Length: 311
Length: 213
Image (tube, rainbow over all chains, first blue to last red; front, side, top):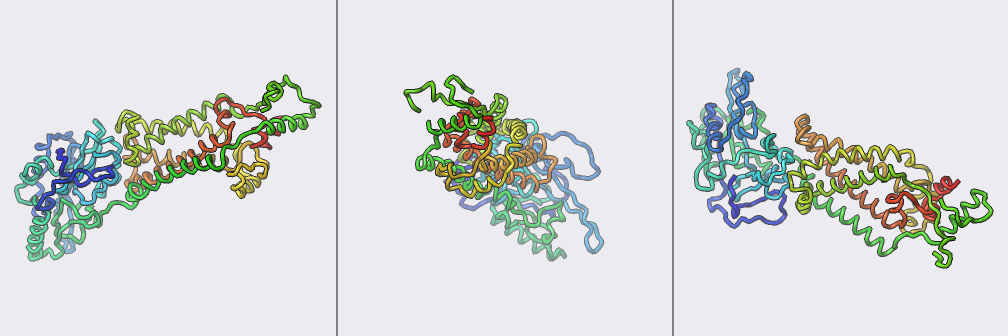
């Protein structure tokens, strides 16, 4: 969570352009996770904990390698282990490093109601500024990858920052730095795509003819990408979404509904004002009161009006 | 009013709302205002500044659902009190067809209205539906205690439903408040509890005749 106030492309709950004069000349950055090279050592999880000073609760072994079992406000990345029996009857151990994908079109940012609680830097990193977070959890509703986690202690959401503080000073993210097999690499998005293309050629030669890059267009591409051996079936990798996109419900809720609803409310009030100034109030006249008294007398069968009677 | 006979023309009055009904109404009204302001703060960036009224964004988020529960309970008690006054009948259909006369203060041309007119009755049931939907969807999106029990798609649906019904309710209340400002003598019914005979006969003649017996 670094405050780089001149590098902001998008800001949550803000309808005017944020300060974004500083544009990286080399274009946006990306982290490439080559799932085919991952050995599941969890060094990246540890590096993330160390750099970000995060220590999750020591949980319990649930019988699988996944540990901790899920992302939490203290565990911004976790390894997801899947045992996949391929059509040839062989076991493949698919290990995916899960965490924020840093979408080009971030659902969290779209849903967030608090100005400046979520920003997207000009380099593409999507970052939470927790001091502005109100704890509503709308980002969780908006996220197509189920990433943000709400802390029960301070009621703010946390997720991978792509080490925006390190990247800001020219260093690669901690997980990239530590990865012993070179499965995680970091650079400009263009370079990472090129690197991935080379890896995919290599994988295809080795018999993974469906190998490919996971850079889902439904969210405008992501700044964390995967090289997958089975790019035609991303869901094999612990339910990686086939075609992630911001839900149409979230688009409706945090898109067109916002200005239309405000306009509708304002219009109702303005219509009332003009009705009042054109037609005028509906007032009860002295004649109305007299007519009411006359009718009441008739109903009650009273002969004449008594001055002292009051109800 | 004729100034020369102040004693004689002092208008007679009928009670329209008891003290308990008035308190019940105003608890609902105050909580509604708090909810509309805090809800709009979380709905549209242009309204976020309203969160300052509640002590900031975190407090707005904390308070909104609790105030919501108070409004729901208060409104439901109010709805039970007034439910039997709000059954629609044939005269109400006719009243709605003559909306032009309604809007142009020509109540003498309208069918005989009872305690409530068709607009009030329809708004009553719109509010009942809105409040139920707001409570149900509000529970689903109440992150602190309940969202963990619901699947993400339901949470998204509930977010849309909550915003849409809140919009309908707010517009409905704008109409409700304007009607009270427009039809003079109405606000006193809810602040002091009574209306004059003339008001009752002009706007709710059937109710006037029943009440006067």
